[in-house]
Image (cartoon, rainbow, N blue to C red; front, side):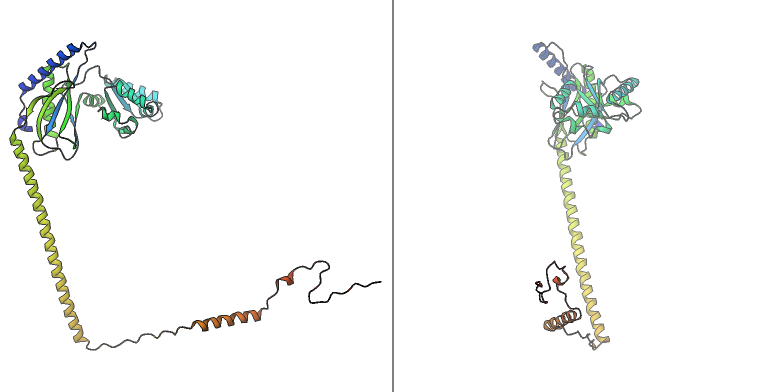
Length: 366
């Protein structure tokens, strides 16, 4: 392992650190006189030489289960077509029993999560009732909007499981009993859970060695970046189990220098190519000017005199006064052809009303 990953880990030192940590946890639990002997999680704290450029999540399969049997596991599943929420729960319970999965304590369909766990108090109660949350891959993108920010603050984000795989038990066991390391680009420290205080020292050392091997192999950096590795619990001091040599720091400086030199060489090559392109453009423009001058000279030799081409004569514009006169003449002709009828000529006459032009006759007296 030391040759493959570049980390020289001393197994005896790791075992001594684990034993010291277990002894400290026993003394603290005895002094507090707890009614229930709850086991505390034990984690690995990785400190890097520098902050990574990109975030990464590393899945760590462990040889020994790092969770206790009392941990509550909740499974979010999709709504099966033509089935109610109760029928979907029965369907998945039967499927898990047939595959021999006993770690899942409750199954919640997506429709139930939307309706029954919509209030804030219901979400907090759901968060406190379970230790681990897993979900089907088909609905993993729909859960964040319904769960809320407290699941992410408490680091209880649902882990994805492929429920359509042939071996569902192996997939669930790998996710529940495995661990995850989230390498962020906001700091140089990250933590992964590897066991609990109720485990033996041999089991914890096996898990620690396996986790360090996977992390050193899967981290997305070419040079060795792990500076210090500590083992700790929630209420204990971090105990160092690995410290990198200063030669790693020299390697980092060399890698940075090489990266800078490569960047400078690339910039210089770009500048040279740009200068060459400019020179070629200037040469091509000079050649084009020469060719144009030669062409002009040839044209002058072939055609010594240019014959002027007669331009078509334009029609004189009519003055505004002549246009107005023509329009008025047209209007007069139209008026003379069709005499205008008065509007009151067609009106019906009332009784006793005479024409305005004719004289009114006086009635005869007998």
